[in-house]
Amino acid sequence: MATLDVLVLEGDGIGPEVTASALQVLQRVCKHAGITLALEHGPFGGASIDKHGEPITQAMLDRSLKANAVLMGACGGPKWDALPTDKRPEKGLLRLREHMQVFANLRPAKLFRALADASPLKAERADNFDFVVVRELVGGLYFGKPRFIQGEPGKRVGANTMTYTEDEIVRIGRVAFETAMGRKKKLLSVDKANVLEVMALWRSVMTELGKEYPQVQLSHMYVDNAAMQLVLRPSEFDVLVTENMFGDILSDLAAACTGSIGLLPSAAVGKGPALYEPVHGSAPDIAGQGKANPLAAIMTVAMLLEHTVKRTDLAAAVYAAVDDVLDAGVRTSDIAKKGEKIVGTKAMGDAVLLALDKQLSAG
Ligand code: NAD
Image (tube, rainbow, N blue to C red; front, side, top):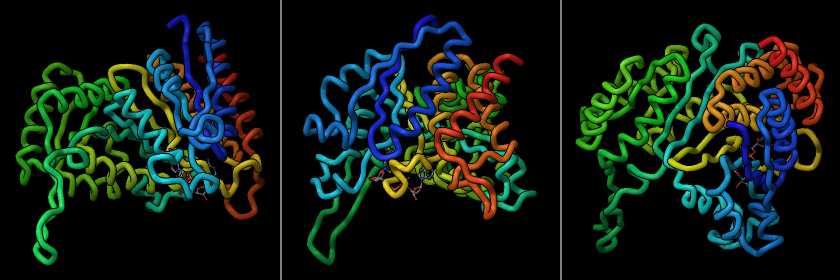
């Protein structure tokens, strides 16, 4: 890729602070790799409400589809909490995801060796786990029809429906197989094929698709067992693909195992440009104080390098730089233990840049 065109939506609260560090990393990597970086910044969330009266404008939605990727900070905050639901900053994110038709959510969960004691898992169980949950994002139980509550009070019935077409299973499956191809080539498909017909179809379609990826070792597990294994043997996972609600639950379980929300990147991908965002919100309690941990936003850039630029080597350099600064004991307040020296957003970002230079020149 000779030119990388990124739409940057910093958003609110700590969004602009952590995105500034993330962009410095992206600029450094692109310069090293000879990629021309074109950045366009747009208002988003509360910032867009203040400027344009809506959390995302049609112009930004249209622009998102012309970019190679969208990099988001975070949106929301108390200033806009009293607005009706469909006018709030978070609605802008839902509109953006819908507009971009991003149907797969990629959520890496990695235990940093230097922060192993931040994990609620015992050290012998955690054992440097490093895996990705690929969650189907626009189908399954959260979107299936019919969905209703109906009937007379006292005799009401509520229903939701889990449906998947073969095409929907194939498209999420391909994202998962491709992700596995870029990693250890191990894919676990999580379902409930023993009880649900829709999940029996899921398993059979995944198995069939697996024939196109003979290098990937595909296995299957029921979701209840997968939840157990995630906390018992997380280091055995590489890539896990699953239905929307199962993925919602399992990805939060995986996130909790890592120990800090300031360390979690994510990507939402579809057929067009992908949307990259840290998992955390706008953290109004620390916004404007220069305290936020930028590592989630920085690793969000690593995901962009991996999935949009298709340069796993560059992504690996960013991840390795993050590992190096954590190994060296650099800590923002959210990951510091009592008595440890604390640095702010900028100092953490600068430390990553320094470590990144070493990684890039070594590689
Ligand atoms: P939050 O993630 O913003 O904050 C939860 C806690 O984690 C806070 O104590 C915060 O200080 C801390 N934290 C979060 N990110 C951190 C970081 N990078 N470094 C250090 N500490 C960090 O969640 P919340 O408080 O529930 O929500 C705050 C606002 O963000 C709300 O308006 C919410 O709707 C919005 N939100 C937005 C997104 C998004 O933009 N994708 C996601 C979640 C929440």
